[in-house]
Amino acid sequence: MVVLAVIAVELLCVYVLGRRLLDGLVGDAIRAGRPRRWATWALLAPGVTLHEASHAAVATALLGKVTRFVPFSPTPMRDGGVLLGEVRWHPSRIPVLGGAVGRAAVGLAPLVLVPALVYAAGCALVPGVALGDAPHELPRALAERPVDVGAVLWAFVALSAAIGLLPSKVDHQDLPRALVVLALAAGLWLLWRGGIDSADGQRLLTDTAAPATFLAELLAVPAVVALVGGVLQRR
Image (cartoon, rainbow, N blue to C red):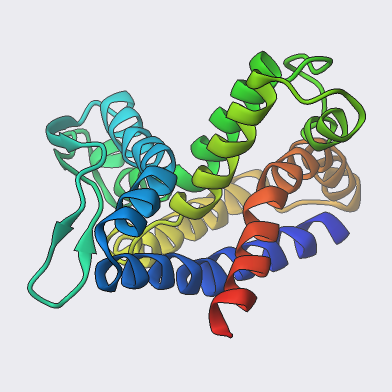
């Protein structure tokens, strides 16, 4: 499906160019004077807060226990980097929820929840867009209607979230094991039901087309911000 290829390209932009953009902004802020540093922190604060909140929300939903929640507090690290925010949590004792799959879901939560929250905020703040409309209606409404305070606020939060949604290396540590577990579960399910025929395959593609398209549109803004920002950061 074309939409899956689009999602793959978007994730590539977010992970490669988005990481370059975020690292560049933080590095410049550390070396810059106080006014620029505070301006950078103000830009990153909403996105990082949403990022950390998504970790905490999914951890709680999977019956884990959040022991430390720091939505945004730039703190220098020994390796020269900056810790922007932090969530510490204990996984559930239930095998699946507290296993690799559950931990991977918590780690990757920002990739889905942050764009979804930005979309919901846009439906509330941007005139002419209602919850349930396609995400591409938000930038269209901004272009076609007079700019107001709500639209400007949403645009700022969307920009911040596009930069701050990127999961860290720690967030990905359980992903390989989670993929193995999910692949094994899918294989056992197919073995149990005797395989999958062409009709089932076509129905599966049809059923997943709409949510995949919606996800691709949600990731479009972060991908574009990462592409433009990452290219400009390189210069």
